[in-house]
Length: 611
Image 1 (spheres, rainbow, N blue to C red):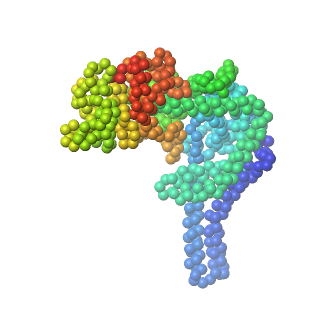
Image 2: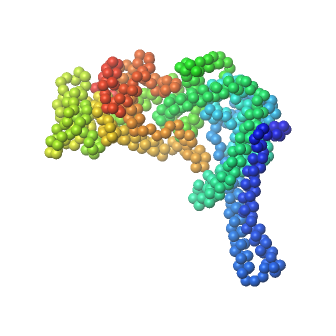
Image 3: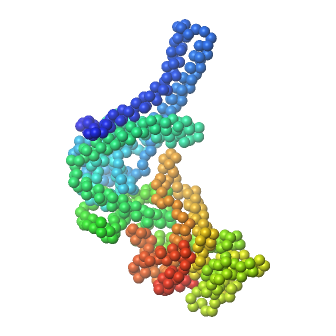
């Protein structure tokens, strides 16, 4: 058919010529492998006819034959690995024709209009992208990775569609976006291009196989061949993409320009939804069951806030592309579970420690639990630093602010021990009580006051200042003036980082993270880089403040579609907490946060409820 014919773009070498260049690399590699065998045949023939008589030629012939046999053996092993190794397959949610007959009908209509073969199947991925993926490799059938018509020899590639597109885009927009993707099945059906792609994918799979013990030479040889054909393979794919785009220009070209704006908007909303909303739930052992439906709410909120996005929500009156599915809710749940596996490394199936959560239950089951778990971790870190070796050198001082310690064992110019007593707790507590209330107490050379600690003993009876149990006042007192390198805040941040790393390693060893294919460990696409100790400390202090506000000031946990967990006071979101927490964590100044807490009516001396 014409879809397999001309694939040349003006001014650019054709994709077919680049494919032939890739195949020439394969032919040259084969020639190099056969060269010792050809030389051995010549020597044996010459010896048999008497042309190479004499003693040296017998040894030379034997050596060449041995080398030829070894090269043929290694070459056969390498060729078998390249042919039989299973190329990478993107984890997707298969979508049968019975589950989406209208979507299959739309795709086939696109293929007919562009005169190209229709995709053999459709699958969904939890990402803002769409592409064609070949799953007709024999190794996929042997391993059970692919089945059905898409795995038959010579079958057309599978159309992979980003699930957020189905929920945010309208039917006409989805059709315009998919047109150039579907048009790629025409060049993909060309024998030379298909052969070249199969060779490159086989080399890529051989690199994975070569990572095993004793097979490193296979990976080295495969990488060498990949370097030799890298440029031609990249240009081949560019030629295929250019040919597909040129063929699709006659299908909804004007609407495609508008639809591309929705692609960028969907990507922005999807990224915010995953990093700000889904990630906290995944870390709590819960996975939002309807991420694709949530992206519509997130993008609607973004349209409301951003003037550049005004007018986009007027499209919501048109038919959404998810109406092309028979059971959108079931498909949404499956793609949401796959997103948790790909981006966080969660289990492939639900379980007691990995259960779905609905959006309506998110504030109570995720936000509140997250805050209280972080508050508990913060106080555990404080307890761990309460021993004689818990603080770094120089992190000493009285309750309130830390100051230099004199040689006689008296504190420097700092606030008195009673200055951090909770509001309304009565007269200032004696200095001895302050030592057991959650503040470091300086010690002199005589050792009568003991070493500097955060707390003398948590298990002791409540001291005169009333600091019994996990209180916000304890955190404020410990971090007041505790800024700078080597100070208490730095030690606490380091402790939290170590605790978080230990918990993540423990979660990984319990089977939460598995293998997707070969040596590719899940998660394949981590969402966030590791956070610094200061960032972790700020997050934990914020969680402690939110817990205190919920327990003593009538606040409530909430969820923002773009920012994730938020604190609601009187039904309104409070956005002015973060700079005050940073002022405490980075500068050791608690006054802005104390003023904020006082205005809200938060009782800092009241113990908070932890997980």
